[in-house]
Image (spheres, rainbow, N blue to C red):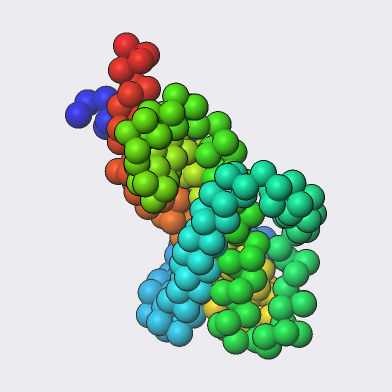
Length: 257
């Protein structure tokens, strides 16, 4: 318990110091583009906890979660297939790396032309941009699975489905979750970009509108919200990962001891 509290304190000391320094400096500053932190937090409470929470925050999070879920399912399935079918992998890998190297933000105008400005466009662009890290991580994880495990699964005459669910997926689990974490970060960034470039609602759109209309306090409140959401989303993902891969973390800890 003491060690856990120490780790929490180690993680929080720098943000606390930054906030205190920001509060003290901005309170006496006369900079038009850096309003006092107290005003920013007040506007944050007024905008995001009441007025725009249901109309803008929840739709943004919904689009990101749905897009990330689609990217996760498709990425793991495609990665498994490509890892097991060499001919298909060699045929599609160059094209896959080409599309992966294209920034997701650059694809937003194409999706706007095809799907308009609705939620389907945002979910589609999020899923498309976020799927490739999961595909590559799954493919590498399955290909690097211990051959002895596969030989044992054949010796025990496991079915194809059992080999996938009981052997390959657990063996590739750490790498898959590493790819999923990258995909989640990509989904969060593209969520913001899709709202800034192709929408009039959502966290990204309101933050950009505040910047363009010189509502500096509103702009800063949107930036603070995005930072908090990014931190919380990543924290929830890490909690889910530790729950699913507790056996892996336990094995690594035992090996170090």
